[in-house]
Amino acid sequence: MCEGVALQRRGLALDGMKPIALRIDVDTYRGTREGVPRLLDILAREGIRATFFLSVGPDNMGRHLWRLLKPKFLMKMLRSNAASLYGWDILFAGTAWPGRQMGKGLAPVMRRIVEAGHEVGLHAWDHHAWQAWSGHWDVERQYHEIKRGVDVLEQIIGERITCSAVPGWRGNQATVDAKERFGFRYNSDCRGGRMFRPLLTDGTIGTPQIPVDLPTFDEVIGRETDAANFNGYILEKLRSSALGIYTIHAEVEGILMASEFSALIHSMRQNGMDFVPQSALLPDDLSTLPTGHLTTGPLPGREGWVGRGL
Ligand SMILES: [Zn+2]
Image (tube, rainbow, N blue to C red; front, side):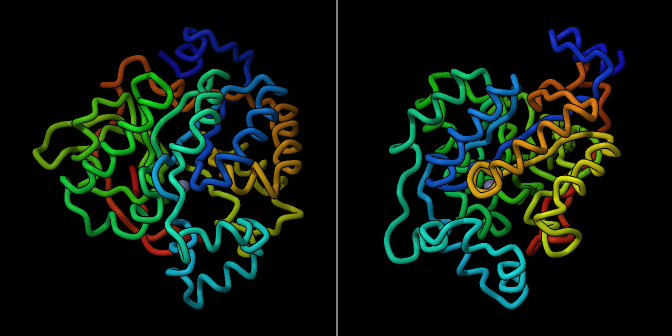
């Protein structure tokens, strides 16, 4: 069955429109508190259902940003004006005081996402720790980190978690093995151009991976385009994208770039694009997906490594 028919069977009228899965990563306390409500308003106005990946543990993102303060990152910060992008409170979060527990303080905001009909999955327990250390963690350590986040998020939203996406696409073979025990419907832990079923260490086939094929705002600003021309740039990428999975951040598109993002959504509609949660892109018959290894490697515009799909 072709993808379009599969989508229509799930009650998503396409009318020849190109389906784009809008994925929203939420990394910080401020992003959840301010960015998420703003994005919920924009999406409600447009009648759009999206996928939110939430962080629920301590917000130590400031510590992460400073740890990465090496020349290349400093250049990127200056180019993208990160201080105004993230806000000084985010840059300093967790540097001089312990990070605030996001799940504790912001549970009502997280529940609003579910009540609005969006798909919700786990991003991280501790976003900073995962981005910094997951490459050194074995399967057990990754499993416990994910379990901690899943338990808290399930308690908050009162439903089983069915999907997840590691911070910064820092997914590797240990991630594939660790996540298998949760029985999720899919994971989104890597970059790549097509959905696939990753191979576990024991050679069996794991939970489907839905990679992200489009760049994020911070990956291309100052490198391929600038803030003023970003919407035109990404629209062109969306048009030619085969998979059509676009990631935004509550901290960026939900706060500083909110009006620009709202305009982008309008342009996307005018260009014949429709919006679906990520899970709607999965085929009915998962065995039709190719199998292969989730590997790791560099990605232009990002520091360090990311998980790579097929
Ligand atoms: Zn993130």
